Image 1 (tube, rainbow, N blue to C red):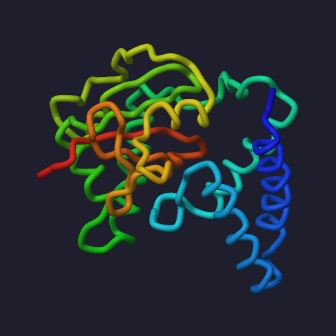
Image 2: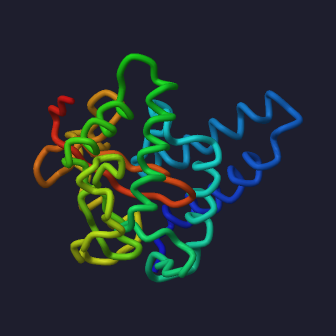
Length: 213
């Protein structure tokens, strides 16, 4: 069953989502909505404020998903056939394009730069617990990958995001998720971790703490 705390979060998420989507005509309302959305994510241990990849659209999408979990015994698993295949070259091309755009917005350096370097070095891992798959990203612009349409992924336990993040993100003494700069820390091996939106869906990305081009 959904706990009382989760039920409160979900009701609040519904209100924050409504305000976030309907706040275009009022700057003060927009600020309140964004603050409310951030508060809901913080209650789940997520901090979107320091990430250039997690936009208001991403917040709305995530809040929408959280709000639909009310009165359910387990996290909803989305196996929609129109979801991009994370093991395909088309997904990798979309990923690289988004990271390049985010890196431009960051300036000289930042999390997007680090993930882009890890992608080009073959050390960026993408996990999708909704579809139950994990794969090492590859650079579609690498001549050696010119004929690569897809690669086999690794099966992982399918779960909802709340359970997955609780199992994979490191927590500090205060029980909040540990942050290093603009990213989180993976519990298993201490690697850098990022939870955010690629295209229209959410993914969990990890890469080594030191990534050099």
